[in-house]
Structures are given as structure tokens and as C-alpha cells.
Image (cartoon, rainbow, N blue to C red; front, side):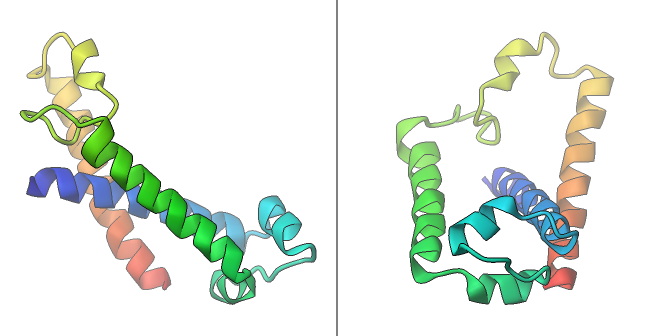
Length: 120
């Protein structure tokens, strides 16, 4: 369970870092369209400029994804980190290159978790 939670949090942190860098670089067409004006390139100020309905949409989307992966599309018991079912496509789980890629994803997730904490 803990490895699956670490991997899930790492994936979310990687997406958070990507979103932070896009926002800071000035690329936010959806945010500009939602607010109907130009929002700040600083992600913390842009979060304050987002209307309450936008925050409700974000929270509802997160809750829906959590509900989907917890109750509707349950991952396998022996591999709870495999939400999309990629393990069925892998012929040999002990293949060294596959294990290296899984370890890279885990380490990049750990780095992203520390990175987003530093950015915030």
C-alpha cells in the first residue's frame, strides 16, 4: 500500500511541477479564458484570482478521480500502483530494463514531491 501511495503522490507532484512551470512561463490559455482576463504569471497569485466556481471544479475533478480509482476501477490487489493495467502488457516483470524504468519513475516522483514543496 505504501509504495502505491508513494507512486501516486509522486505522479501528482510531477504534474503539479509541470503545471507550475507552465504557469510561470506565461502559458495559461484556459486560465485566461476562465477568468475572462489575463491572470498573473505567478502561480500563487493566479490561484487567488481563480473564482470560487473554478476551485469547486478542481476539487470535484480530484474527488471524481479518487472515487474512480478507489471504488469503480479497482487496481489489482497484487499491484495496486497499476491503475491503467499496464502490467498485463509486460511479458516479464523481472526484466532489468523494466525494473530500471519503474525505479526511475519512483525516484523522479520523489524528486518532484520535494520540488513542488520547494516551489510553494
